[in-house]
Length: 196
Image 1 (cartoon, one colour):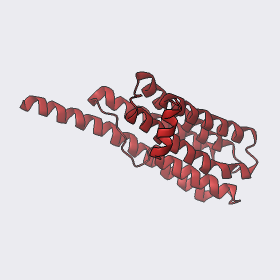
Image 2 (tube, helix red, strand yellow):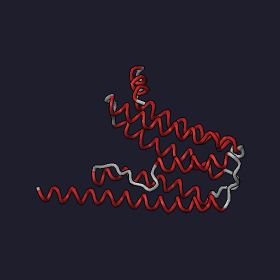
Image 3 (cartoon, one colour):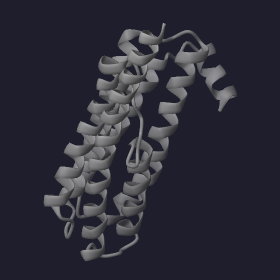
Image 4 (cartoon, helix red, strand yellow):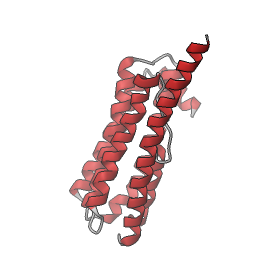
């Protein structure tokens, strides 16, 4: 991917532009599902869109890191972009026939809370927290597989409800892990400063 990143940098493409593109792509896919949620074939595009989103996230990180494009605006766009993309891509699943909206909505809300908990790590301990077990990439993989199965014609049923419930539990665990890690980091730094 480095040659591609190098080429983008040469063409004047910025990390912030890539970050914004990932969010726009996610929103467009989400709108498509909302408008045509009865068209199961559309879900077959979801794994591709999720892959492109993850790839774009990696590219914007490399542009920012390797080509001195780190900015405060970039940090804001990156964090907001992740939350917007998650919401745009995953909330429309609640409209798909047979899918339990009562379970999908909490997953989206808990995903937002888990990311907010990770960002709060910067405030508490000075370090962004990324612990799992249900981080951004895990959610992308999960929803990509579910979209593929539904797009291929598998009927949503109890099997999917069990997956949603498990995901909710894993998100609770993720939130706890990130909060705990921030507090442990703070405690470690406090002890380290005391020893000095």
